[in-house]
Length: 465
Image (cartoon, rainbow, N blue to C red; front, side, top):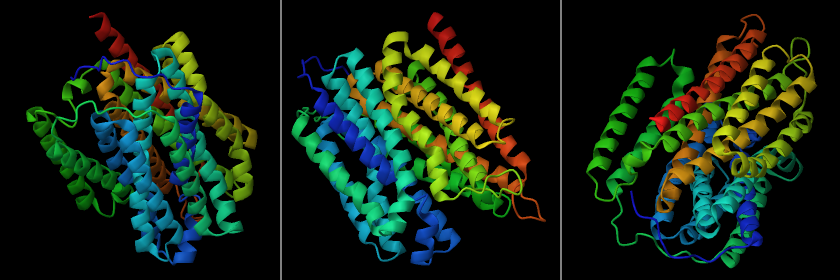
């Protein structure tokens, strides 16, 4: 791995960190507005269900491609320089989405908006470069928590803004916030010099990693159609394996690889990815199933809640998600990332498994969802702190971006698996899922989350050895 820079960088103040936090809120809000407003977009743009599904995953797919590329470029050429240019692309995408008269233009806007997922690893590079270790953990927690809170805020305001103003303002308002936050970051954050500008860019590795992630996200999107299109789904799975194998071969031979594979062998790195995957499966399952339960007919197991009521019930989760980052950063600095992560996993698994039995009252769902949002956010913050400590400073961007890509993949797996379970649970007579489908979804997510503790035991044994 590369050597860490020895030059003493200037110290940034609280306003600069808050500017990064504002940018995290704005980008997360823009990222999350499509899903809750998807029925409205389908009506206004006359979209078929298949087109609606494509729209809902476009930003997710392109974001998974942008994040590692942005992190790598930030490591090499300076995070502030890359961040400002990346946000210009995002702002252009947001403006295009706001003005889009049809689906093709909106899809182009969503592709450009996908660049926003590169903002977090670039922010972590700056925080780690300009703050001492203890303060950087708290700052990482703040930025991470505000990103999670911004995502929840975008989910809550998308419907009211689209219905009260228009779908155009649903994209325009977060885009305006991104522009303002980017100007603040540009004014308050010092310029960081390139770390390894003399090295050549590993274009083959970059393209192969992007192709692998693209094929993987497409495969995840098609998993629910496994029964109807088994050969296509199987073919995509084979393609993912082939591309991943080829990428590993290219990276092993590259003089300046996109991802130093020795970095992936570091226990703190691969364990963070595995646990992030499990935690994000749990959080995505909880978000999906709780929302479905609240909206389900009150004649059965549901509560017939409308969009406004669901937003009100999810408000405690918004607060918990926003608070989880700073709490996780402070706790990680005081008690260590391992202890914080284990406690967070325990709380999250208990809440998920508890929902298999206690989901008959609204307060059951509200309390459990808030606990899951808090515990999940604390875990992710601690894991990102652990990742930044496990690699060289010059690898901060690519390392944290790989963790964030794992977050996207875990969330996609959780939603797709849960959708498949609910589809299997649909009763022919009523056309709605049976209650056992929700129980199975919560139970599976709880078990997956709890099993991630095994990773810590393996890492601990490896450290002792």
